[in-house]
Structure formats: structure tokens, C-alpha cells
Length: 318
Image 1: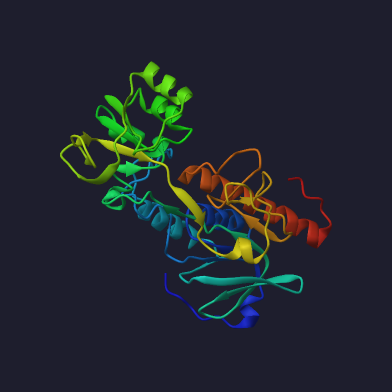
Image 2 (image 1 turned 120 degrees about the vertical axis):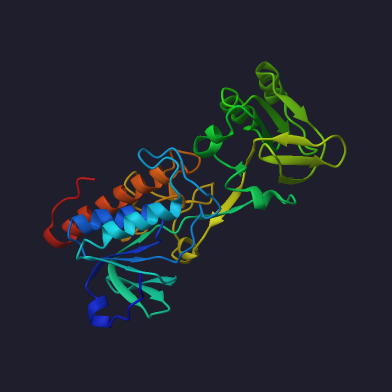
């Protein structure tokens, strides 16, 4: 969508600026547009699921390329007169009296509320070749990608405390599950779990990954290579944008923004949805396209309720 310059008088009419054009931000903009709220969506063009060829576990969209979903969503948003989309990076979010000013390369835009949907950034274990497989042969979510490895050997990289649980989830899917301890130690409880599953453990240090006839080949510092259909890997992640820190939002142990069930952050007037946020009741966000979209809808609903309270004294029901 073409970027358009806007004057400050036009910008002052926004009810909500949504920062982020992934599923959470797109759904938030759709929900706000359907309520005839003046909303601006700022899309940087960078998304957490960029490495993935296809997305899964989303009713009616299972196996659809992420870019195709975004294009469909953009086309739907274009039918709502009060929704505007700009392909531009947001550089800052700062309070401006009783409003918010969001900095962009096109100049600042002003809104009554801000909804952050900027997501997180994954960091993979430092193993040669792994990044080239990530999103297809290698993945971090068995719900999103496990089925695609059905009937093949699947490796689980790491010796973290959840290794037994991940192996158990994959057991009905894979022809066999192999834990790659990568020189680490698997604790007794996990070892017992893995033995009960018939899961083998390769203790050698993993030297690297490359593509193979089944999907991928794991090489080790010593010992034979292992050919697999898929690799499950735990990533570490961090906020993709600096706004949570800049605004002093309350963060959880996961590094994500703490929100209530409707996406309200610790700072009135700022909302968050998608992978960058979750409630204190869960240890981490439910990282899926469908869950992110649902969170965007909830946060947009809260925005509408809070605007009603501000404008008409209508108590927010959510």
C-alpha cells in the first residue's frame, strides 16, 4: 500500500494508532474499523513468521503462506473508510497531553490510544546451518509445524527442562524422536520420561545442520550423522520494538508485556496484543497466528470500551 503524507490536522483525528501489521495488528484494525473508529495501522514490513513458508493450525487458513493472509487482510481493511494503513516504521511512542504521539519517517501522528502489536524477535541456538532450515525443516512450535514431520524421525535440540514434554508431544507424530542433548545433561526426571517414550538421546555436541532427502541432516562433533524430517528447537526471544521499555510498561519474566485479559497494559491508554504480551496467568504467549489475531480483537474491543467511557461516561464492560 502506498505511503501518503498527512498533515497534522488530519492525523489528530485518529482514535487509535495500531503499531504492527501482523495478525494481531490487522485484526485489531479490522475490529476498530467495524466500529467506525478512526484507526491508523503502521506496518514496518517485518514479521516474526517471515522464515515460515506456510502457516498452520488456523481454521480455513491451514497451509496458507503468511504473506497471502496479510494481503487478504489488507484487502478487507481497504473496504472500511475509517481504517488507514501505512507501510512505515514507528520510531517512538510518547505521551502528548491527553493523547499519544507516534513518530514515523513521515512525521509524527497523534491518537487518543495506542495499540502495540510489534511482536518479538527469535534468536536461534548458534549452530551452523540451523537458520537456513528455520521455518521449514526446523521450527519452535509443534502445534504449528509438527504434523508436517509426520512419519519421519524428528530431532529435539537441547537439554532444557521441557525436553521430555516436547518429545511426548511429538511421539504420536514422528516415526521416532531423538533428543540432541548437544553436550548438555538431561535431568533424571526427563530421562525417565524419554525412556518411557522409547526416545533416544544423542549426547554428542551438535556440529551443524544441512538439508537432506528427508528434510535435514544433523552432524556431530563425533559419531554418525542423523537424517531427520524435522527439528524442534527452543528459541529465545526479545521485544522487536523498544516501546515497552521506553514507556516503562510492566514486563513479565518471559520478557513480554503484562496485560489483562483484554490487552490493557500497566499504562492507561496503551494496549498490547500478539506475541509481545500475555497475562500473568501464563508463562509465555501462545505463539500462533490465530492466538495473535484473537488477542488483537480483544485489545481493540477494550479500546472501544475505554473510548466510550472517556466520551460518554459509559462504564467499560470489559
